[in-house]
Length: 243
Ligand SMILES: Cc1cc2nc3c(=O)[nH]c(=O)nc-3n(C[C@H](O)[C@H](O)[C@H](O)COP(=O)(O)OP(=O)(O)OC[C@H]3O[C@@H](n4cnc5c(N)ncnc54)[C@H](O)[C@@H]3O)c2cc1C
Image 1: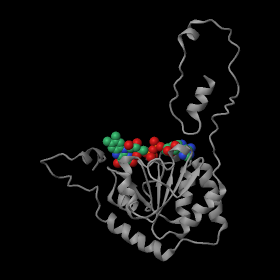
Image 2: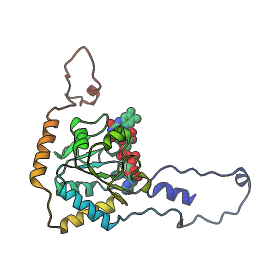
Image 3: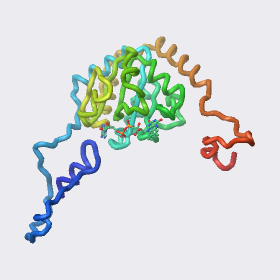
Image 4: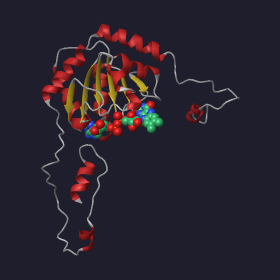
């Protein structure tokens, strides 16, 4: 049972099945105490990312013309919202998150493009399609986000993927720089490397990229006519009572 709880709460957390055979559940046994620690040779999630891979990721990020940071539930599970905010502020790159990552980044910040995916904003989805370097942080390229992986991969872009579960990496889309590790540990190391380097993001290219993103954002895709008496739009439910 201790092992079951250990597996459920560490690495990629999730449900664990404990299968107790009938003969065992019928037998009597002497209780010898609950173990203090767990040793499992076959299960040892890696927390610290490979420094060489993190350095490669940084080089790609700094050489990007149209960078994008795609984040997910792994940021919340790693309790790494602060590290994510620091990274985005240092680089000045656009950022989005999945439905499972809601709240991982402040929605009030200009660099946030809204949620992406089938219920996401135009700017968040277009940036995903048109970026040249994608940093995926604790997100698993779900079909509600990338659609058909074949179509998604038909566009040329480099992908860096940080995930604690190696089986999540290159599962749905092939990535160029895999980094197995805990989001908090990996982002902390990435931030430290950015502080050390003298290289900077390409400001000219970044300004052009932001102009393009603002053009998408100006379509204000979530707005609707709230005074239409004929139909009630689903968005109506999300308007605060006072408006
Ligand atoms: C009808 C419908 C519509 C939907 N529409 C949308 C939509 O528009 N947009 C959308 O985003 N979703 C949508 N979803 C939800 C979607 O199916 C996925 O559940 C969601 O996109 C997954 O988010 P995620 O990639 O953050 O995954 P999560 O399930 O949160 O996975 C987290 C990833 O992070 C990794 N991880 C966990 N802990 C750590 C850690 N400590 N360090 C590093 N990595 C870690 C895990 O291994 C995993 O790969 C929809 C679902 C339905 C049913």
